[in-house]
Length: 362
Image 1: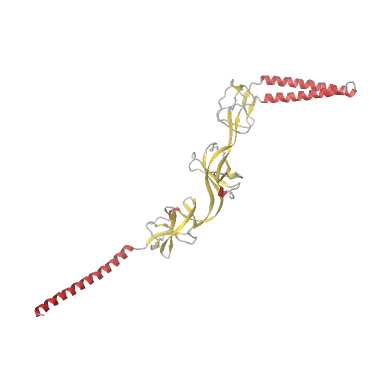
Image 2: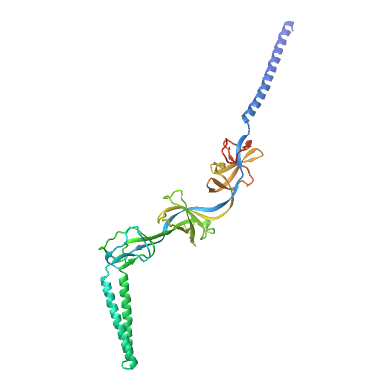
């Protein structure tokens, strides 16, 4: 190899070594920069607020729907036919037991009663006379027996006449409120024709049904809470009075009935009601609603352990205003993230905010 060729080869080798060194340096610098960028991307721990689950009394309840009915209601209908002479009440009027609602023409019945009473008086005098004669032995015993029998028939006649007269007067059978009264004096009414309706709404009943699985828990005296569309936001409370002894084969449910005091008469028969029967109560763990995250059919929370957020699936129970019962998944000692969980992932580093737990992050 000539000196000139050796010199050329040396230059080529030197250039290659120099290029390799530069590439290696650039690679090391690039790796170092990537690590720093990764560290920058990770950033500082996420600030969160935490709270331990609160122990509260939680109702074991079941929701259902029901209908409301008056505690008492009756259709008013005369038992006899006749012409109306007086209607001393009006639609929607409150009446007391015994108040007169309708009078029918009773002239014939009054005359019949006077005649029956006269017959009874004569029969009484005849019995007294026959007894006196019998004691003197001047008449046969059968004469006295006949007189006494006639007296008995006369008594029955008076009772019948009085009942006929009473049938011409229709009175309120209990305290209540009348419905629509569309009847005027002079009208002729047939026996059995409903002319008005009387309802007692001082208390109301709620009829509903609940699933068979609650049969052993439902019992008279339990609280039933009711909400009706007419009064949104207001809850009416009563007590279970009846639990049916049977399960309906078709629906696999059983009927219940509750009674609610209704002194202000806000509830009316025929109303639809959303009802909740409280079967009992027990201690449970609750957390703020904001702590619970929903994902499809799954609910979970984040629990902080040693500065790390851990996802924890939970089973939720009853709702208590802005709190929700956690039936399974957390303990009373856990630190549950109640604010700042947006964007968290399982295993993320966190720092607990120093402000009151559950508040808004600043």
